[in-house]
Length: 239
Ligand code: ATP
Image: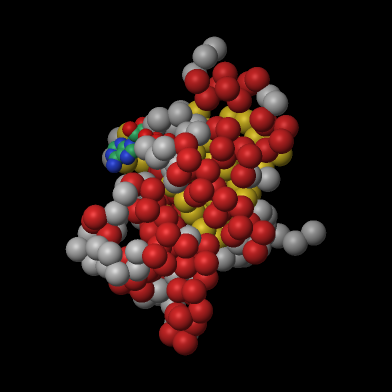
């Protein structure tokens, strides 16, 4: 059996005296889509940010492609092949769609790959191709979400981290977005996806973990989790 692309053991993240994540363990096998579910404040964003090196890990290990990257800076982690599409997008509003995408390719050592990666993003998200010259700040929420994912793809990550890609979007846009994720999955892209929308995430994922107050409390194959009444119960915080 090959080792997972990402393996987190007993991750803890503190914000001063506050605990953002108390004890999270999870695995992301190569080529899989894994969902990280949980309600508001459960610790999904903190977990993704800790993996990407944006917030410091106070305890535990984050082994990516065989190496413990906990404590390494974000710029070094992205060069190892791990890219985050953050909640709230953090785009350059005054820059064009294409410039935002090109900025995503900054960590890439092999510049010759940029045109091919741009083509890949435009194939996955045709809407971005149509709007390549438009300023990012004038795009709809769904288009900005696509752009944030596209920008992350431009560093050709082995692992794509997606933070709440469905947040605030109309159901039809969410479906379009998830069709694109399914296409990426089919290509072999490994994805770790944080979502509050349980149903869409479980449909897209192979495996899922549920976080509650900073701890992984449930896990299983997505198909099994979809039929598990405890998922909704834990998720909704009903005892
Ligand atoms: P959301 O969907 O609201 O982002 P989440 O599951 O991603 O929820 P986190 O944002 O990771 O949850 O928050 C986990 C816990 O850490 C919460 O109790 C939150 O209040 C706390 N927290 C998050 N960011 C900070 C911060 N910068 N400073 C202090 N506490 C924080």
